[in-house]
Image (cartoon, rainbow, N blue to C red; front, side, top):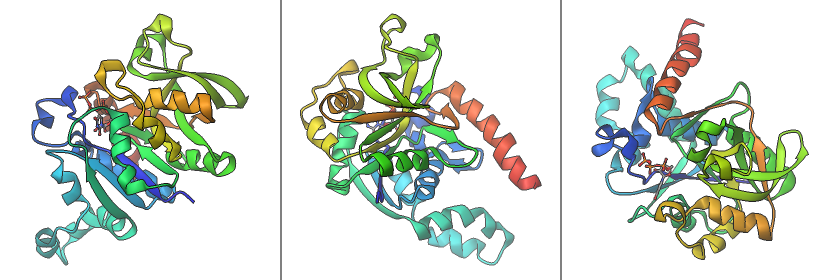
Length: 278
Ligand code: UTP
């Protein structure tokens, strides 16, 4: 059973400067919850209750968020404001947290390799908290875990994107073996539209096997001089098996201002107000 989930949260979040100059991007709120809380809730829903945070300088707020704030608890104890803490109290009681630090931002692949210390030799999930996913029934991580339990190999989430946006993503090519499920045979990180092998883009949800660490150790820096997870996954696809699943749900790119605003509007209308007025 998969129990662990890596959250790489060390990045600088430059697209959100100046907001992210002294606060982590992953703590930006979508309505009333920070991005990283949505991610941890999705991991817990999938049964992954060992949360492995790969943090860096300036990210202390994330660790503090997942800890009890005694002064605050004391201050609002017995008042109606206590209800505002119920969701985070629930997470703190259900999840275990471990942290390691990425001292140099050498890319997502390097951040995952840094998480090896916390994950060891087990299969594990990866959630990029700045990709906010909203699903009607099962969360995306839960959808991937179901496939992993059946197939016992790496599974990554993909979505169709239009040509104008394809160069923002890692893109796969593969053979569709059942509706929405592909065996990956090629992958390119942020291709020019004319070089994209398909319109199927990788989003920030993965189930990986520990073999990925072995590959990452030997993966040289790629696009933008960073160790790219996509490059390591391509090696994995060529030497063992990687599946890509067109997940059911919606994804918002909260690492960009436009996607963040879109997510905020959507969550406010469809989740926050719908829950409040129910
Ligand atoms: P992004 O590329 O979206 O994050 O990485 P970023 O680098 O912080 O953003 P910009 O482009 O400067 O605005 C996706 C996720 O991977 C983490 C980030 O924190 C983010 O959650 N990451 C990225 C790391 O933990 N370490 C890295 O070296 C790079």
